[in-house]
Image (tube, rainbow, N blue to C red; front, side, top):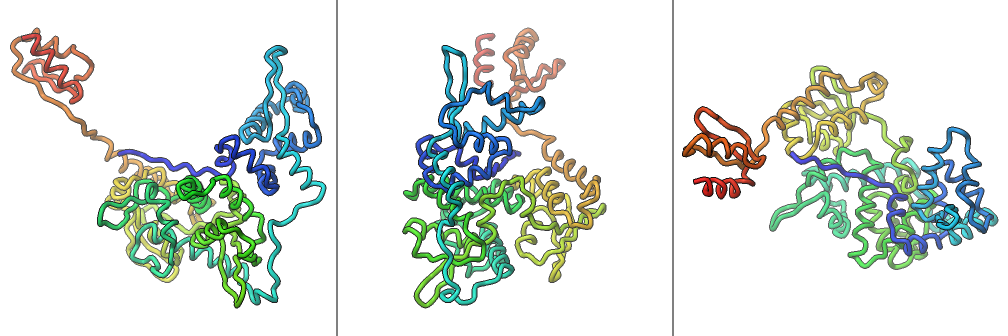
Length: 449
C-alpha cells in the first residue's frame, strides 16, 4: 500500500522558495520585512540588528568572534536561514579565500524606517459609529470555527455538510488535484492525501491550504509574490477590528472573499459601506507550525478494550473519527465508538497509516489522559500497527512459471540466469521468475534448445 506524506510548510518556507527577483520585490513592503524578522531564529535576529546600520560586508571570521564556545551549530543554522531568505548576501573572495556577508539593502532600509518612525498598521480601523455593534472576540472565534468545519465537512463530502455554506467554486477547485479527485459524471471524492489531511492539526491544515492556494495563483493570473504580500499584511491587522473593503484593490477584494470561506475574515455589509473583520485564524498566518499555543484542547479518551470516548459536539470531529473507527452512538456532547479491525482496514485502504492514526489520538488526547505516559494504551497502539502489518505480509507481483525442462543442465543454467528467480523446485525442475524478465528468459531458453 503506498504511503503518502503531506508536508505543510509555513510562510517563510514558501517565501524562501520564491525566485530571487520576486523575493527582492517582496522586501519593498515593510510588513514583509517585519514578518521576516519575527520569523527568524533568535541568533539570526541578533545578526540582523547588529548589521542594521553597517553598510559594508562583514567577514565570516569576524562574525564567528561574536559566538560563545558552543554556539557554532546555531550560528550555522542562522546564517543558512538568512542566506536562504536573501536577507543576507554571501560574497566570496576566491583570491583571499574569504567569505563575507552583507544585509539586503532594500530589507535594511525598510527595517531602519520601521525602527525610527515606528510601526504603522496597513490600514486604519473603521469608526464604531459606522460599523455599529461588532461581534465579540468569542463570537468571532465561534464563526471562524464554524466556517472552518463547514469547509472541511464539504471537503469530506459528508451528508452532514451544511449546504448553505456557499463555499466558492474557485476555492474548491484549488484542491481538485490535491485533496479531491473527480471522474466524469461522479461526485468529487477524497484522495489518499485528503484522508491524511483531515488527521492533521488545524494549524498544519491552514498552512497546507494556503500553500496550495498560493501555488495555484499563477493559473488564475495572480502574482504569487503579491498574494503572499497581502496575506502576510493581513496578519498584522487587529483581530476583531473592522476594516473598510474599499481600501483594498480589486485583486485583494477577490482574495478576501475566498479567505472568508475559510473563516480567516468575516465580511459584513452596512447601509453604505462594507467591511471585513480578521479572525484569530488570520493572525495565525504569522505563527510557526511548531507553536502549540494556538492548538485546541484534546477531546479523545481511548481505553485498553479499544473503546473510544470523544467529548465533542462537533460534526467534523465525528466524521474524522469515522475514518478509522466504528461510531456506535452520538450524544449532544459525547461520541462513543470503537477501534476495530474492519474500521482500520478501511482506513488503511484509503491511504491512512497506523502512525498517523496513533499520532492523531495522542495529539487529541483528553486533558485527563494527556498527562499519562502513554496517553493512548500501548496494547491499542501495538495492535493498530500489527493490523497494518497484516496487510503488508503478502506482496502481489507479476510472475511466470517454467517447467518441462529438456535437461537438468538447462534447468540449472536457467536458475542462474539474471536475478529474477523467485522460487525453484530442483526435484521436479520447476521455477518461478519475475514478470519483467520473462521475455529475456524465453529468449535465453530458445537459444539453449
